[in-house]
Image 1 (cartoon, rainbow, N blue to C red):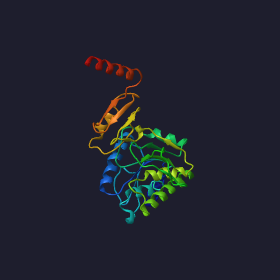
Image 2: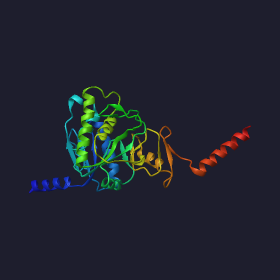
Image 3: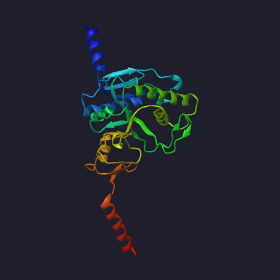
Image 4: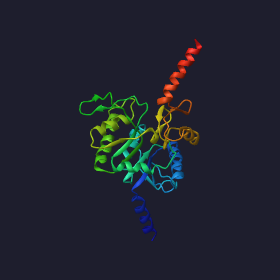
Length: 280
């Protein structure tokens, strides 16, 4: 009877169509994942969350814990563990993967509707200086910016099956051949996408607010992506200006400022000229 109950729970757990995914190894990242998952559960108690890790963890926040051992040979390449397990580690048809250093500011269920039209979705990376190379010619694509792989929305599909496998192959090859240099997994992500048939949607910074860096916003932030002692303070500052007001995040000052537009911008120019004239 107990076995049947456990089997029933397992089947129910794996039949969820929509869910959230964390990948973490080591105490530091496990603690971060718990903080992030807690913020999600406060906003959506029914959210299905899976954790992929190398050791068992007993925490009710996670509906499923998938144990995957660390490849000792590549232990220092923590990002490779993520790339290796992100697709097959998810039991969901539609998945929102988030890094451990994230914090949910709002319920994100609406984002999954994007996958009715696209295979995956990511946001731009504000500062990554590395450029992808076109795989067939090894030519640098100078105008092709990278996307941040700390928040990835994706669905299970034949297109994505090939894409995520190719992402792993490219990134792993760079590590083995020691050609990865200072770049992370994000250029390999783009290079794999160039070979794929995946339809990719570009999310706004509201869905992946990389708070260590400067960026602009026009909507309320859904997910903070950065390490902070008090996420609620950062959330309130990011979303301090109501509505869809265009604003800039200043990371050093940890505050947002309103972007001047249209008549406001013209008025500010006139005001500055008057001030300069009065100083003469």
